[in-house]
Image 1 (cartoon, rainbow, N blue to C red):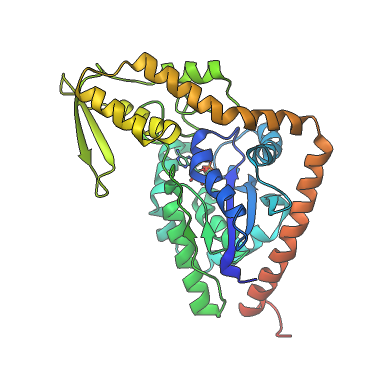
Image 2 (cartoon, rainbow, N blue to C red):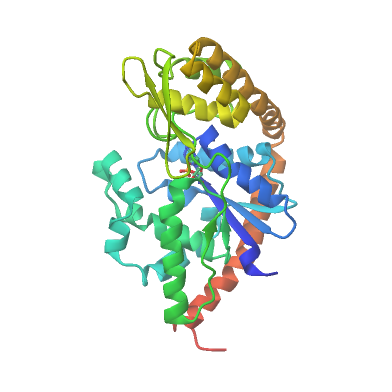
Length: 348
Ligand code: AMP
């Protein structure tokens, strides 16, 4: 097995998966699982969860719930190693070794670190600072070259590549420099009209477990404008749009809604709404209703599978135990090699 053909990805155990996780990460995870040339490892990043304030009982529940979500969306334990990060101690051990080639300054300057400190000013912890090192350890432990994650993770991947380079230079390891595997929805916008969809921002997300009524309700709160105005093409890739209505105000909320339309109803539908905006006007009530139905149609089979899994806890327990065993088998080898190369073992 060529190790660069390994794939690793993870989602924190902070609650139910939302559309951002699904389109940004899970769709890529599924595509790579279906491709025979890759060995795929998908974990619940439960240790990462403790880097920001959390509830102990919720974590205990969620680290299992994310496994059920994984199985419900179609991750298959026959094809992928599905596991909980904290069950494989080597993640933490390797993270400490990797911290020896990582400067504090570099970690403090990452935009993701700064954002979280702003969000939780009372929790400016070492664990938070170490987040990217732990993520590098997650990936390098399995010598994975490909990581299906959303755009928000790019600074962390850059840090992982730098850590891999330093380890290879200083200690002669052979870590690949991991790159992200992009999906169509690598940036799913928030329903609040500002920033990305995120579990930690109330009103920003739609969960995979939401029923039609809940989806309708969440979409109905998304901000819009008068429905008529100018559409400007922006961004280097000419893919982004600015919507400026007759009052001259820009509406990020409308841009975000139309991104969701494109992701769930296709490009033609989006183009039609853009034409309406510049013509007779968009009727947002109808747009939101059609969008809610399109989203629910994709989620309904996942919810059905979830109910079946909830009725079979023994199966979920087996997946968790077997996944950890398989992950450990690879992890112990990498850690042993790193210990030897860093001088923590005699050469054998
Ligand atoms: P997290 O919940 O932060 O652990 O994120 C898990 C995965 O979902 C990561 O790969 C993120 O990049 C991805 N993700 C989270 N939110 C979004 C979003 N709004 N758009 C695209 N991908 C996202």
